[in-house]
Image: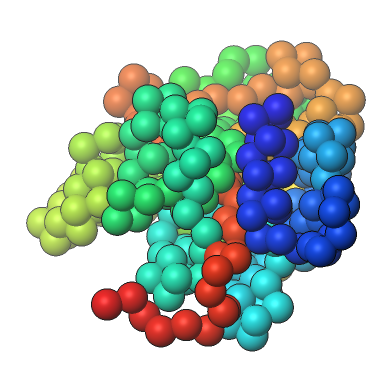
Length: 319
């Protein structure tokens, strides 16, 4: 947290926002993010508090939904009214604005904190473009945890944590027979991606996951192993309740918190919702990283990017 706060102070000072021209004024930073659930809001308060304690003025702009928040950020970058900082996933989502010279390189803080040595290679590889760092990593996630409600499992007569895909399906069948929602899910595109990635990882294993998701190997995509993945994914849809379309992920997690649903496949950010509800791991809920030793651990994360202080928002593409 201290390093993140220091990084925000460094970057906010670099973009010279409110307070510019006032000697000794605290650097102000408008921050766009999509952390709006109960657990996420608690985390943002920690970030904002650390930034203010370090001498800055945090201006919070929370926009529900990652797609919406990123769209606002990109529109404001292009329109010349960019925030000081904005949340993106650790991915290629911000590559276009890097190529348009709209983001500030973070090489100074990267050297101070020795990112080349301390950051996991998959994270560093994504946020470093043409030898320069352009994003401040905030967290590292695994997005396909299998969460389950202990209360729902007890009601359905499930006494053993699933250890294989067949056992997970058996548990879902018992939850359905008990009149509970077997799979708490939200019918949003990114949640479908999470669910599919989880099934591909758990049914297909590491090699097939990489062949399909990284290599786009047509032979693997058309293989019998991939057919089994698709059939398992289709079966998972039968455990979703009719109210799932459009449901937010945290509302799906709330179904587990209340014991109305049994299982959710979601990232480790779901833990914040259990914590906010004062539930304890091992007592009120459980979580499974993977159903077997061959299941890959899928790395993801969030980062802040910062508007370039030396260029207008609409500049020509780098040659």
